[in-house]
Image 1 (cartoon, rainbow, N blue to C red):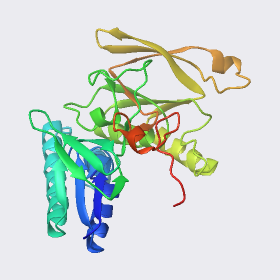
Image 2: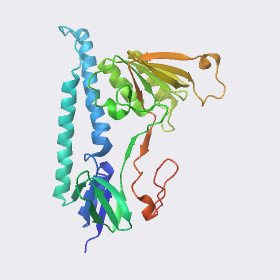
Image 3: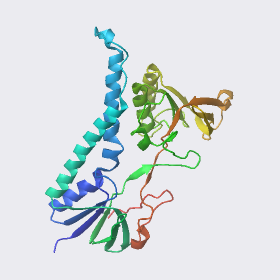
Image 4: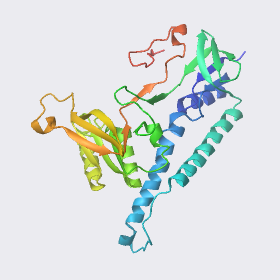
Length: 309
């Protein structure tokens, strides 16, 4: 009898593992509560690059005269058509993944997975009877979602997550991005290219404050962002915000990570913006999955603790 492998999550980790397991002779089931492709296809790499390409083309149009090209009128982005193009591309990619699963005779079950006990997962969908899936081996590839904190709660209108920012119906006139990491800086360049006035607030002393990114890279990025007229503040955090008729009034203060703040660092700053995009990290989709029922442990942030086996 073939080994029964069940995989929770049909993102790049899940569906690739499913295909390889099937190639090795396993009987494979993949459970996914949303669209196949995971964050990468639906809310990350692919849709962001589609929008970045549009921003790059628009920026070239603005420089057309420098290349001897006459453009009548002012070019602008048509967000409805951009979103339609994005949906078409994502739909084509999703069909490809589904075809790949079908080709390898992998069972795909849409719904929420719950680990009922060792060897058994229950899948539920609204309005449908639960489906039980038996397994010999379980792979958890449930991915992540934007980190939402009480101080800056997402509402999808004025306070956005990166997911919301990939489904905008219009380019905001102005936007403040909280977090100058990879995601925040990518959205800063994209939205600036689409026509928004962008400000980035980062709590650390530089943009891209990652151990894997040296300071010279940060300096290069900051120089290029200045060229694009993207404003940024380092060693700063958002202290508070309030709604206004036109958007948000945001109070910005010194970062709590500053050991010896200068007078300039301590000076409060107020920004008036239409929207705020919060890009301060992501959290694992590990809650309410039944991990305790198989003895799987998580750390204080919800990440599953794995061993070397």
